[in-house]
Amino acid sequence: MSWTSALPLRRARLDPEPAAAPKPPPAPPARSELPAPSSPPAAPEPRLRDWIGVLAMVFGQFMAIMDVQIVTSSLTQIQGGLSATSQEISWVQTAYLIADVVMVPMAGTLSWISSTRIMFVVATLGFTVASALCATATSLGEMILFRAMQGFCGGAITPAVFPVVYTKFRGPQLASLMVLISLILNLSSTLGPTIGGFLTDTFSWHWLFLVNIVPGILVALVVWATIDIDKPELSMLRNFDVSGLILMAIFLGCLEYVLEEGPRWDWFSDDTIFACGVVSAVASVFFFWRVLTFRQPIVELRTFVNRNFALGSFYTFVIGTGLYGATYLIPLFLAQVRGYNAWQIGETVVVTGVVQMLMSPFTAHIARTLDLRVMLAIGMALFATAIYLTAGLTNQAGFWELLLPQALRGAALMFCYLPANMISLGSLAPDKLKSGASLYNLTRDLGGAIVLATIGTIMNDRLHFHWNRLIEDINPARPAVQQFLEMQTSRLDGMVQGDPSRAALRLLANTVQREALVMTFNDVIMLLSGLFVVGLVLMPLVRRPRSAMAR
Image 1 (spheres, rainbow, N blue to C red):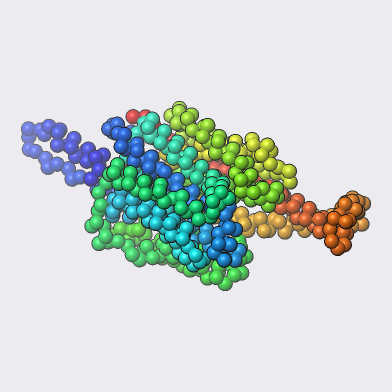
Image 2: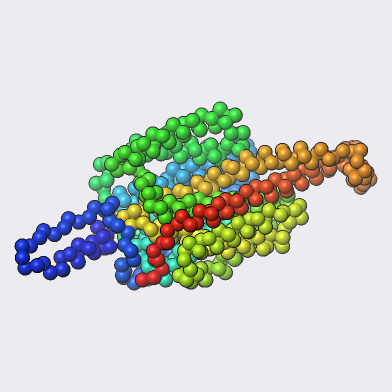
């Protein structure tokens, strides 16, 4: 039993009993019935080893989240190295995401059974081994298998940090750590493609995975030597819900496949997508029935009964859509419309990360000064404004045009993540933190997966819409169009082989395609802004959270 849960029992023994008939001591409360204290009890000052251990866990978290995005800018090189097609290579990303989404909600139960330290160290070593295997893969099948292993282990690393942080730290130390974690989480998603592009251009795509080996081993060794907040509860293995585990894997695995591959294969018009959608829907019904009726469920969904946890998870879902959506759309725009390479894209989008780092020293002070709900509302409003400003893209938009929107987005993320985390996890009793942290991280990942799938579908529809509207006005009989074609034909005469007039028509078609694409990006970006407006409207439903920033 943890120190905090044992404290009431120790005090009970020290209280003097009346001289009259002694009363039997009260039975200790069940772990699931422990209420969240109105204010955190005085905790021992964190020692240096606590800081070292938690920082090592945070670095492991950084590696696991960054590896979701690190391959995105290097898929072409990996495709050539594995002799895969352009459709097949997407599974390098999909395999990781499916395994990650399946593992994240299980992490709470596994940490109860094996202890947080053992689970984290085993997951980190497994992630390191899987990274080494990815670097040695010689076929697409091997790469998919090893990436799934990597994603499965990474899904156990990410949520394990929060129970340790909330157990070991209070007051200003907790605020500082949460700022650091929010900064690292945001930077790992934002800078993943940039780091991946640099490693691939400088060395080879194998270094996308080799770079994890030495840090992974060091993180595992440091965490094993410094972190020990709980003990294994092997008795839970007797009632381990294997059926729930299988149902959850089928439900979330098929759902993630549908979300990842749906936009590419026109959703349910594809037989495989349709079959996976049906299987996911059926498995979800049995899964929810199982976890709500079984005495030791694989996932404790009743945690969502806590209003602040449910709303905090919702805001994390919204933040995930904005984080993953913007991180996907801006580099895609710069690549497809402006023709930027990976390094030029990195130089442009790095503004968001720089602003986050500049804001980080002040975020903890702001969190201690403002009501967390007010801080979150400011962050949501800033993010909505930043996305709205981004929705004015033109075919010449570059670093300077995106500077202000990206700077606002970086500031918004630092205002959003910390209060959402504190509102959600800070409202839970200590015994609920493990399952709560798993569900909290799952909502962020699902937010990213859903928004990326939705973006793909909306972009296809809006691109066709804008193309059809634009070509209605591209009539060669119009003087402006005729003048454009004559100028381009004259310019291309002698520069191209064949008929220069056909080359001019092709150039006109490419121009229309480019403008339709720019308008499509603006439409999708504007929709992201609307999600944050919805979050602002729901803010009054959040109860005032108890302060974990003060002692």
